[in-house]
Length: 402
Image 1 (cartoon, one colour):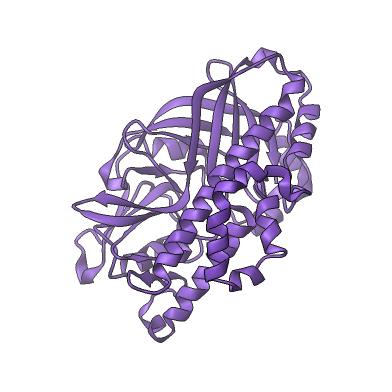
Image 2 (tube, helix red, strand yellow):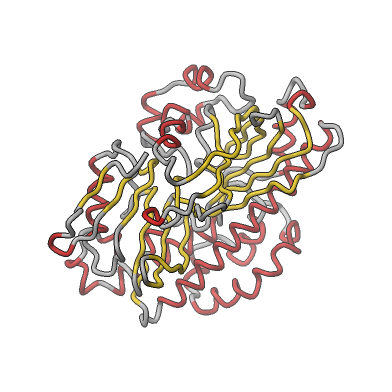
């Protein structure tokens, strides 16, 4: 479907247009999009994906092009959060009938929630490319050290770990009965600390100008600001960390499931994509910073992953390179209920019903991730047929939550 809603179409009062790929947007998210449109450094327009919903400062599911400025809260605190998926040389019938032992093995191999590897050396080789950048970051911003418990150890021990919230690991089956491994995670505690640290620095830098902002969470750095380049470098480092974190988890996942399966290989069909990040790109005649907050890159022919909830299906897609979306698409189903609202609305029996046939946790600790707390992924996909083409449709049979 084409763009469903366009705000500020005539660019009156200096407001930039907002192009929205759904007609289901709650009032708080609309307010946030309107606030973003007021900022003087927005380039051309803002694009809101079909899974758009309220976030902190900026909406989740938004693509924000900026000229010579970046909003740290628009990138968020889960910097570099994204997806990794790979197809195996296995068919569905080769999976064991009882998947619970496999799930237990995965949970033993990959720390979840607040967990971390016990030894700093656990992923030492993977950490080597990151070490110099981490040392430089701590040296330039020693306050970051105070925001982490055992800061020089934590980021190392959390490399190759899942985290909590909506992060997950899944075993899925596609339309050809091929088996896929898929996981979702980001830059863990260190990325969160970097995000919170620079959000506060932006607010402090703008103390005398906050009255000009429609929302104090939209505090920003401008090029030339002493913190601008440091933030760019820190975000780049966190994105690299998130990418390597997912790669390390995939290695651990493959090793954990091998004892339960016949011999298999990883195919060449593997995808790794961020959906909370910033990059520099050329759009509508200018080089700008593109912030994707809950959106993925969908350049022409580029493969991406769009997951549904743990009771729904997910999609492997190929981008269509749509200019109006800044070559972007939705990053998933998107929440329609807050975590607190979901915990109040549903009980364990609802979770068991909605995840029937899926090997996963079915306890009160994951009620806030219940499928009905999310938008229907099929509707999200219908709203972005202009943005992506479906390559594979996946249905999970096993899900590990943080």
